[in-house]
Structures are given as C-alpha cells and as structure tokens.
Length: 312
Image 1 (tube, rainbow, N blue to C red):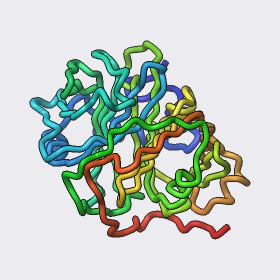
Image 2: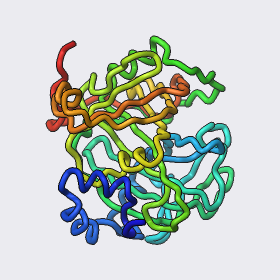
Image 3: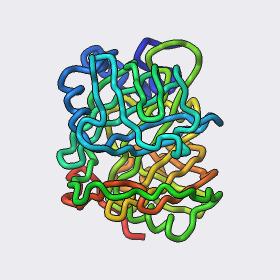
Image 4: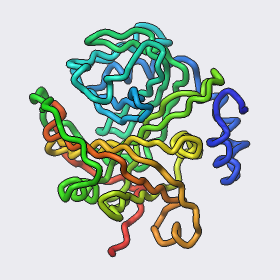
C-alpha cells in the first residue's frame, strides 16, 4: 500500500503540495521506532501530556492528562509509562486494552517545544498505561502560543457530564475565543506498517481561526506546516475526528466527536487569510467539563507565525 512511514492519504497530500520527495528524505532522519534520550528526558520533565485514544465505538478522543514531573517515565528507548489517576472515570479511556493503538503529544507551552509518538499499549492497570513506541519524532514550534503554568494541584472536577448533540452558547464562546485546540485521528487497515494507529496533533492560531458556522459545524483554517499531513492524511481515509478545546484560565474542557471534510476549493480557501486549506467538522457529540484539569495557565505571547483573522 505504501512505504513504512506514510499511508496513501498522507502521500496523496504530500504529492499535491510537491513535497513528497523532500519529505521522504527528511523522514529517514527524523522518524524513529524509538525515543532518543533527549525525547525521553523531555517527556519525563512535563506536567501534562495530550493523548489520542480510540474508544469501544471506534471514535477517536483527544485528552489531556496531568501529573507532577516524572508522571511520565521512560525506562528504555522503546517504552513510555504514564501514571493515570482515576483512569477508569475518564470516558475517553473506557475502551483501552492491551494491544490498542495510542498517540502521545508532549508539548511544553512555555517554550514551544513538542514531540510526538504513537505506539501500542503493552500493559494496563488502574493507574498506569505502558506504551511501546512505533513512531517517534519532533515537530516544529510554529503556531504554538506561549503559556506558563500559573496554578498547580487543583482538584479536578470528575463528576459525570451530559453529552449533547449540538454546541451550547458557552461551548461556542469557548471555541471562538480559542487560539489552540487538539485533534485526534486514526487509520487502522491491518497492514502492520508503522503509519497504522492513532495520532494526536496540536493546532494553533489567533482567536477566530476556528469558525463556528452553526451549533453543529466548525470550519478550521489550516496553515502551512511540516507537510507530513499526519492528521489530514488520516482524515482523508477515516473522517472520524476527536477535538479538545481547553479554557487554560479556568481548566474547562470541551470534547467534540465529529466527521471531518477537507476543503481545498481555491475561492473558499482564499477567503481565509493564510490558510492552505480548510477543515470542516460536522459535530456528532459534544461534552463540556468544567474545571476538569489540575492545572491553570497564564497567557504569555501569540505565535509570530499566526496569520491575522479577518473581521467579519
């Protein structure tokens, strides 16, 4: 079907942008089936990680997990262990099982450093997830807006929350004011190739780069990136998407499941400043969790790469 790094969805977009040959050269250096010592130390020094998981209904979820430095531990280059308090109370993790695909995004919002990894769950308990690495690589710092942790060790709200089929007014306000969100996707075709599995990706811009078209539809500006097209390639083959929006000041989280459609119509794309393409999300479900994280962040600086947003 493809080479070991990319599936046909990713390759199709790389070809369209004329970057396939360049990416093939770069990935020989940057993509590994293990974590370098530098990446291992980076994960172990973080107080939060973003996970891409797949539930028992085949829906991808983007989630944040938090803990003190060291709650993620790498005993060897092929393994990452993550301590998960009250894991079974989190809807996104109910379907986890040994052998299942999982994605990890390490992102330090205070300095824009980020590394990605996806792998397979090789051990699972009430408090730990052990992951064996399939692919590991770094990402550039573009579109990451700087933030610093302002509060720690707060008690997260773990009460059950109702799942809605449309966005409420507060949900729409959160999205409109967001300069950051996270998106989970996956491809599983039984090939056994290293591209197969889950992915979790950061998306950033200035507030308004995600447009709320209606209570059931979003349109997202996609800016020039690393041309790997991990997320968009996945969504071409499997349109199921899981989105996470965070209010970094209050700890509120908005989890969305929906179906993605890539928009490349030149006139529509040209109407959004700086966009290379657009991503439309038809919302199937949305769940709001107030004060859901044990951390709070203080905004520091907008990424210098983020295009301005046209005033409607």
